[in-house]
Length: 225
Ligand code: CA
Image (cartoon, rainbow, N blue to C red):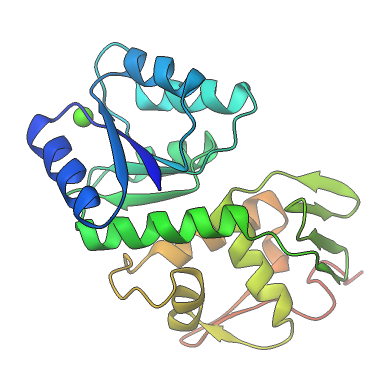
């Protein structure tokens, strides 16, 4: 699996490259935003690990340009521990997932594999719950007849909730299903993606059952009135 690592910190970049190679990835490593943009235009990568704070061009700009060109390669963003804004901005700009620095290589590798597998493993299923519709083959989602842009994680999370409509899923269950049982997921990851889904769809589409988990009501959540 050929991945691109974009990281200007030499120590971290070196560790990422070595660690991912140890785990069977072929790794290209570039250290600034212009170099990243150049190789992304021509390179054929299964996934990208992208630092946001880069010299010459920010990771966020690299990501926006990538998506503006219509390239859908999965992107996993590296963010600093306290930089919640970075995370949100990264996801809004088209990142599929994020990992907080310093990233454990095992977690990073597991997330990359999961992202790539999901990007390729589109099913033919069509799910319709209330006014929500999801199509597996195209990974398209619409709500009340309007198409909604979701990243890979948001899509997977919504799909899981739709498959289990009317049933409460705990955060742990969702983490297991989205991250293939990898135990090293940040504790608020699911909350972040739930928040995004509510913002992109409607707040009532996903209900929080306090102390238990989340449920997508069978009526699709927006059906009252
Ligand atoms: Ca940096």
